[in-house]
Length: 121
Image (cartoon, rainbow, N blue to C red):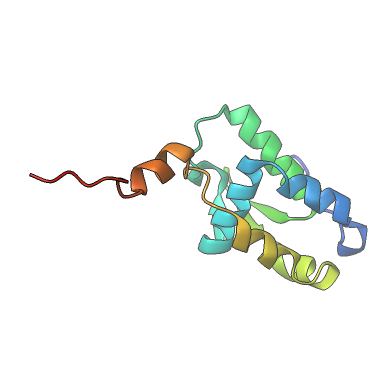
């Protein structure tokens, strides 16, 4: 079994955490974990290659944002919320408050607006 590196709390850096949270896909992973509590890697449904998703999880894990444990053939991910809060108070909550779901696009926003001129019949 391959060893999964997780930094100790003392080795986590603000630059590493901000880098990990700076990508829209990784931010969406963190947002979903904040809602669900924990989730296996296969539970995330993004239209990107499996190898790309693996790289995103590696960056999140090695920065200290998530903790990954193996259960059988699955990797279960949880946020390291307590460690992040001790080191960087309020950072995760502030980032999550400002994060929109990844699938919320400009087209979705435009479709949800009411028409500027109502037609009358």
